[in-house]
Image (cartoon, rainbow, N blue to C red; front, top):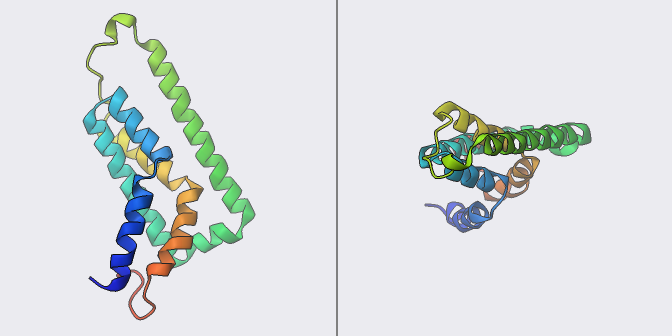
Length: 148
């Protein structure tokens, strides 16, 4: 491993364990549904991270940083999606009868959990800013950006 990769690993590890909306979604899906749903949510989040990394490497995140309108739109859509997930969670909790509280939680499905994780991550403008601000510091100008 080169020096840039070795420097990136602890920074990425610290930021990975810092809780945020992705963490809360994983905890919610794991506790209210199943471990499999939580893991599928993590897979969706990782797919979203890949999209952010690709956008950053291709310079697309720069558009988001330079356009206040685009940034506000992403923030608004992201906030609306998180509100939607919260409302859905409240509605589902009200549907449960007290006798079913101790029943095994049911899975919402692999695709639904992956989609929720993906959308929560991709629509989070803080993640885009993180990739735009931090990732370029660990990119070597001598090698292919996409390969790195």
